[in-house]
Image (cartoon, rainbow, N blue to C red; front, side, top):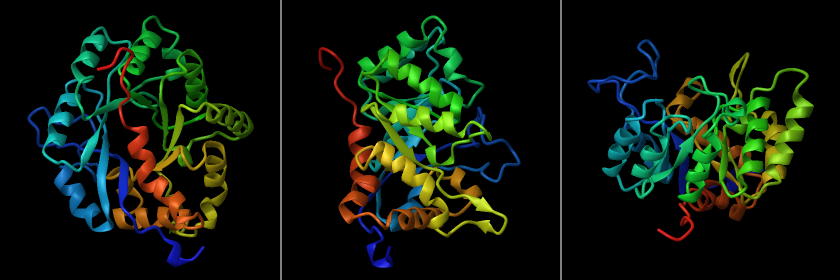
Length: 294
């Protein structure tokens, strides 16, 4: 690896969060007292990101409130650099079908997120009546399913979803930072490799930076083994970049986070880095026409 091989081309950031605690209704997260409890809007993001050749971004819903899908959609309309958003709807909710129908013809709507947040349990919830049918509707309208906060149980749940709905695009968020209890590593890795065999499953490599006893770990050797497993499993066409801004600020500022990720990828050819930082996200998050066309 050399500094000369660091990627300097255009970037799509596939994972950032937007929220505004000054709204009359407030926000469910972050809570008062959290260092992130302030407005984080497109203008705030681009003030940091534009100078690093980030040209487009995808917002991921940070709220379990159904109405906030509409708030996020309207917030993105004001900035052409926002490619779209991954929203939040619960397939078990009585209004799921109607809510999805209201979003499916929106160009900025890229998919939904479901995983280890907001008290959800994908492995259990998919056994309940209506859940798989709801995700089938999501697949039929050409959108994807993002997961959240991976652990062995979530990966097993995604395997079952993929078995039931092989046509559904699944994006596994934050895989480099999966929480795997001692003694579960072998089973987790086996399930992850099985999941990676499915061509419609993708790995969003966000939350790469880690903190050790001396603070943020900047030595790329620390990250090599974990990233190598994911890269070998999913390949250069199914791994892509997300910053997790502003949640990433708990560990490092935007420039440091991006610089560390670039350093971790610098052993790869420039064309492969271009896929990771730019081309894959655009292809993976592009809606596909449902059966019968739009």
